[in-house]
Structures are given as structure tokens and as C-alpha cells.
Length: 156
Image (cartoon, rainbow, N blue to C red; front, side):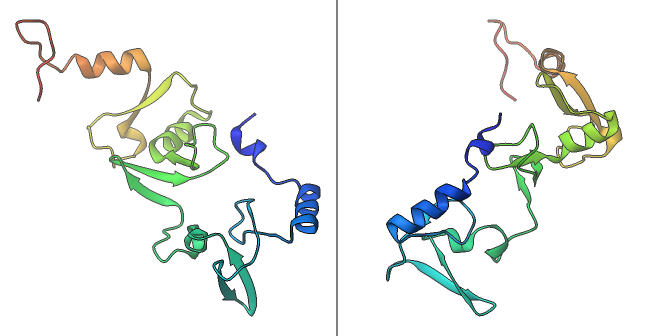
């Protein structure tokens, strides 16, 4: 069972918390509760007042720089799919993994990794992606490195 499944709010618990603590759920959907005070952030949306924990009003779709869950980081394109088996704790999956899974017609196993043949991490075309196990992938990369006289790998 994934961590996200434990964090899903329980409706009965939400009602009990609202009733006994005069709190309301954060409008961003994170599952946290707040007591509306002067320092609570709120905004009007479609004529309805919504309360947020500080900073939560600028999450995902509410943020001005939201790009639909597609991010470029660490040289890869990441897509937000929280329920995917290879998702990070924030719910992002490498686009290369999705392309490889679609090409193979199955999910990648935990020991399988994707390798970009041309070395360009942004090129996620099916012809450029190879699925290897971790040992083969490491040996492929280490075979291109040169060793010094002492047997250590030389820096590029």
C-alpha cells in the first residue's frame, strides 16, 4: 500500500474535527485543518470565500506558473501522476518511464531503468529509449570511462 493511501482524509474524522475544534479543511485539498483567524490566507473564487494555510493558496492550479504538471528538473521531463508506481513523493514520474512502459505494454519493474541512447535526457522518443536492468546500465556507462594508473576513474 502506498503512502498516499494512508494520507487520504477520512470523512467521518473531518466532521468530528470540524465540530469539536471550530476548524475547517484547507481549501487546497491537502487534508490539513485550520482555525479561521485574521492571519489565515483566503481568496474569493466564484463568490465563495476559501481559507488556506499560509502558502497553500499558491499550489498547483492556483499558482500563476502552473504548467499542467509538467516540469523540467535534473535534465529530465517530469509529469505529475501521483498514483503511478514509479512516482516520487510529490507525485512526479519521468516522461522516459512513461514512454518505455507504453512501448513495452507493461509497467517497468523496480530493477529496470531507462537509458537514453543518444545521451540527450530530453529526447524521449521510443527509438531513443532502451530499458535495461541496473547492472547492465551501470556497466554501459562505466565502460566509457577511463581509468588512471592507480585504477580510479578519471574525472571528465
